Image (cartoon, rainbow, N blue to C red; front, side, top):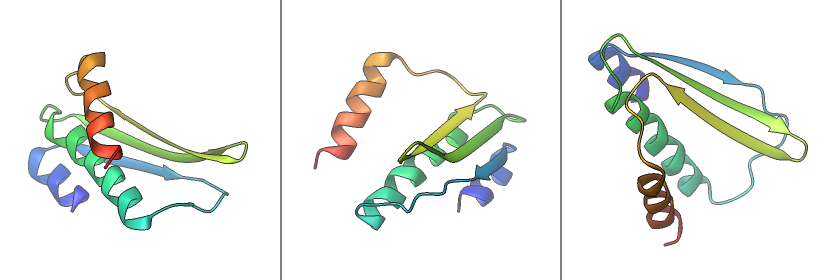
Length: 88
């Protein structure tokens, strides 16, 4: 789904998944959160833009990093989005 949305919008998507730790938690919520981040990175990007997704291990943690060439959200918007999505 993410790749097709990127192609449709003219946004390239690069992935680097080098994690060594297993993911722990509700798989459907983790997948929904990842999908939400990637979809927004593509949707709010510019034509010809780029999204880079890195899933790596830092110590005992898995760290997901999404960078893109799109518009930046304010810190307040990010805080509100995170609190509403992950505190159900």
